[in-house]
Length: 349
Image 1 (cartoon, helix red, strand yellow):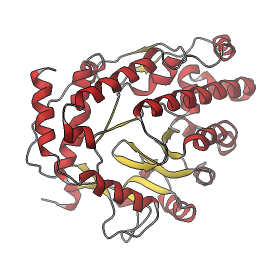
Image 2 (tube, one colour):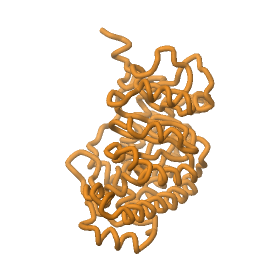
Image 3 (cartoon, helix red, strand yellow):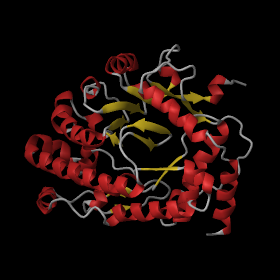
């Protein structure tokens, strides 16, 4: 262990007080139980003044091939949020981006200058057919294997720090959602394929979904977590997975119900969990909230959505809005929501 890593982990470990995780966990359990709370759980979008801002900052590419730097980079936000006193449960991940499942399925990827990696699409429809015919790959390959090795490094390193090892959660990496992964594998031609060869699209979605399930089951066994409450991003959530539906915002309601919802449902039936999407999902959210074993939505761009309607739907179907800007929910909201709160907005100069 390098002196740099030892210095910062020891500092964070000394900061942790007993009871932090229990306070956070109880709050999230009460949110998902639809209890009315005296204080709605929240995460600071922009941090208030904190006593100690000394934590190293790395470019993403420097962390990709260096597990020590990745661990320090992942602990940066928990260190700050712990001091800020919000409801961040101190979560970290193996941070290899959206290309993990595509890479397990055979897609190449590349690093950009400073951001998460990009997937290289398979070259043509014949390549998609060969991928489907090959069946479920070994999940312990490519970046799939790297995630396990990095998580093992995290656990071994943190084991030397009794307080951190008790409160820091390692959450599942970015597996996207079935249609998102199919899009990363196929590229923009998948949108034409919805009309030209829908049976091949379904075959690919079936393969992606089963690979997702196989990999995540192995991950949970390795990490030692179930599907009751699990960490993700800055939250604790009910269920075992966070499905991403970013690409489906470009589909119609009918296409969502044929090519997205059934495959998401198979994952939710296996693990339960929440769904995230960027962009506008007004065309499918009324259908999405009726999914079985769906407990929460994370909508990252509420300004693009009909949030009044989404709030009504979530209240009706008891779907928690997870990490929503407080400007987009009723001021008297006391249940079914975890807020993003702005320090600067609430404390103008």
